Length: 504
Image (tube, rainbow, N blue to C red; front, top):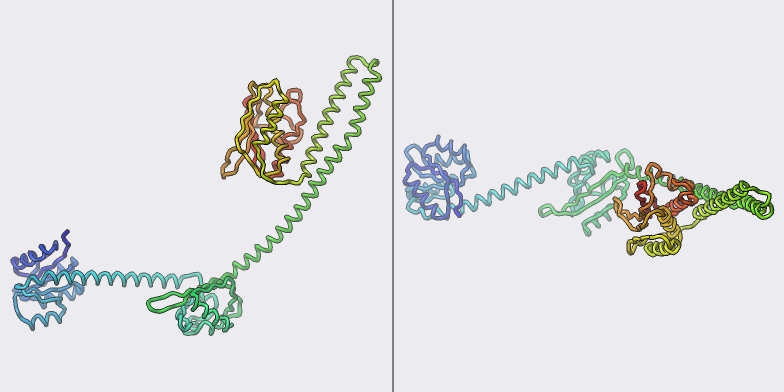
């Protein structure tokens, strides 16, 4: 592939110019060129174009090589200038070379032109690379200086051999209140803010051997006596052939004040939480004890009512008419219902006082055992159970079994009119990755407008005549799940089933 070459030819003979081109093209160059033979024409060419090489005849009717060389040095001082002349004049060649010409080639020796151009192009590329490197260095130095001057940390630059400070940035001057010339030329341990000279010398020696030092909390003294807490980080690195130390000094006074404030409020919060926890535990125990005591104490009058009812039935049955017997049956049913409610209350109180014992639990196995019991207890019903395999959790196995028994008993109860009744147990992943367990049925469902009443004790969405029960089962489930740090909720549609979810 031909190499491009921007060539300005100062020549009054087109034949000589073409001869010059005929030498370069076979050597692999593809010149884009312009031929000029007067000073104005050359000036225009130099001002409007950049040239890789300039060749010039020595003597022309309106121009000469010395004049062309002087103009090239004025406008394009870096453009290589080669004299191509028919004259064999050594003194002239030496004079032009001293004036800045790159070479003097006789037209009879044009074969020398190609290696000269090759060398010129190599030198030009080396010069351009050097210029690019120098420009990059200047840009880098300017960028570093700008960062150094505007940094929001204090910075000291030290000679790594002597420990003398060679530069200090404005932020450190402002932070400590010393003028810039106070730092320059001094050693680190000679600065008033680093009064402990032995410690500073020890730090400097550590830097020289390890190349890195960091202090999380170093107290410095400002010029006005203020104590300034700083984070001090030093590194050794090489600039050119010289080792330097850069010390970054960050003011952490406000951060330490904020941390102290946070620690203070954390202590207050921790104490408040401890106080509230003690109070809540006391209230919870008091409520549970009260519920248990009330439930226990109500049993005595309830037993007396049941005893009087039995006495009436056995000893005075002949004195009661049909309506009287119905009243006794209603009294008996009411006492049995109230007894069931008291049992439920005591069960709720028992769970409130239960200490949680966590361990790995195979929920699939628990559900399977409950399902077997439901099938045996309802031999005339067609119950279809669907279980997810290998479902496990970390929790209290006894409490989790009680929760699942309540959910599955509910599902069995409210699918009483379905053939077949389908009850499913599985898991679903919630947004955020939390696993939720669910029990789903195809029973009577419920109106979502009343979903908030489902887990409240003794709240029922269906009558006791239609579906018997105390209304305490889902409240028990809610307490058990809450003890496990989870939550329980339900979704349903009337006559289209319900799904009860819980997390642990």
